[in-house]
Length: 392
Image (cartoon, rainbow, N blue to C red):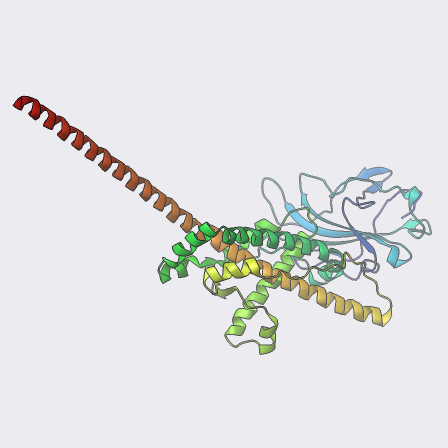
């Protein structure tokens, strides 16, 4: 693209695809510096004859409804430098709609202040990698293609961890408050131990699809670039949970089972089921140490020879294990918290309210009986007085 003419065309490396397919093999992406949209130089626009263009890509779609099509897409725009390590990559998660011509960014990049290496032979190269994320009820987790995810995970792992830490700390704090309130905890224990085994069994399970819808609603935030990584991590964690359940049935290697922490939840057909008494699980969830934080911070990926590639491979595998571990822990805590808050605690509050109502009724009855007795005594006393006056 000639600098003198402004940005007249884009070099699109790779392809735009749907669901799990994305543009691939774009040299410079993996070694460039990534930013989220909204950061310095992160929001770009193309120029046609000096006029900003905000028209989105012409997505092929079979959605034909009155409001027009709507697609969620995650994409990376790379402004290429001669030195791949200096290339600038900008990541965005954005919803494209037929009636809203919006690329997901608003700012303009001034070509006259571009650093050395970006403009070569009077040409600026911009590359795009896009994944359209289909939204289907039977596939609630909106995940990235494996290769695309691996390119971005080192950059956003720390942000994903923060999301999980906030959630886990919040749930742990809530459960801790329940147990530290000795009167309430004692009352809850009395209620729970007073329920018959069948009722406890029924309240300790929930349908998988109900939980997963709640998980996605809680963790997937549109325009948050980390949302797709969180979804992928939760999907991996769910798979690990299912695998662990299968392992208990003797279908996986013992070594894999030993690497997993003691489970809180198991999968039975279409249900999540608590593996132990809820009192024990609540205590464990409140007291268990959280997975240690990764203090590395966002990483820029480099490939300097074979040793660098080996390091990259080991690092990626470590990151993916970390995401699976966090996803697994989060799914279990989410299931426990959901079942407790939406079933067990509701039943407990209803029992407490019923008990208070019964006590109030009993107090009113006792008060009425006491008042009736007083009236009867007063009446008897008056009657006695009258009879004494009559005798005299």
